[in-house]
Amino acid sequence: MDIEALTLVVGAYYLDGGTTVIYAITDSGMRCSIRLNQHLLPGEYELGTLESPGRLCFNERLIAVRSSDEQHLIALLESAIVTPLHIDNLRRLRDLDTVSPSDFVDLDTADYMDEIQRLRKSVIEYVGTDQYVAVAENGMRHISANDG
Image (tube, rainbow, N blue to C red; front, side, top):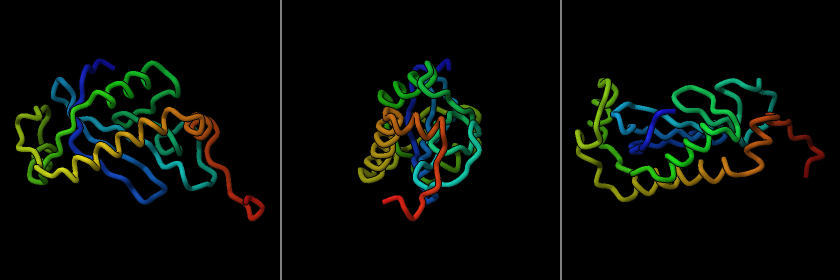
């Protein structure tokens, strides 16, 4: 992963069990995405796929658990600048090959900036847990009536 810095521009939390996606711009102007798959809904899931629960992905590529790529991605998230983009700028972002955060007028909304920061924090904290490793390696189990 040849990236030295990220600017986080959009974040989303899905009600599918907690999938979190953060969209960013790299220091070289490339669009990228960081996704932490849902890790709340038990069930039988195929392991080692982009849809596997609790897995960290970068640009639709699985990141190996406790790997140097994972460490680098977490370090990038920790040091990233947060610059939320206005919806009109998001539409432009979709159509460009490379971008610079300075190409856009940022969304002057403290609430949305706080939301992206909250999503970033939740990804960083979860990836640091033993539960992350267990779910990524073993999947999610069914919850039975005997689980209390």
